[in-house]
Image (cartoon, rainbow, N blue to C red; front, side, top):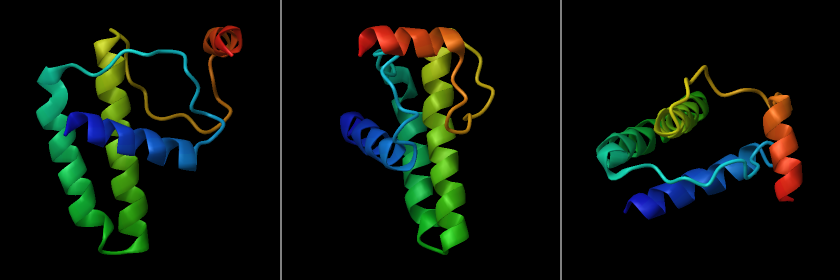
Length: 99
């Protein structure tokens, strides 16, 4: 179930931010966070069908939840999802070396 949720989140992210999703990390979210992710996914599904604005807000909530949990797993702070093109220079350099 968690793999399905993460796959759906990844597909949604690359469809919305195709140039911003680069492989600067490859660690998975730990099992202890599975309940939080599943709850966020269920809430997103319930709310996003109500209207276009709810869909946008619910998707943003889900993406932020996934990124926040992932950043915490790396020992990093979460300061929100950055707009496309706002990648830290060190991460951009790392991405270039991976490609």
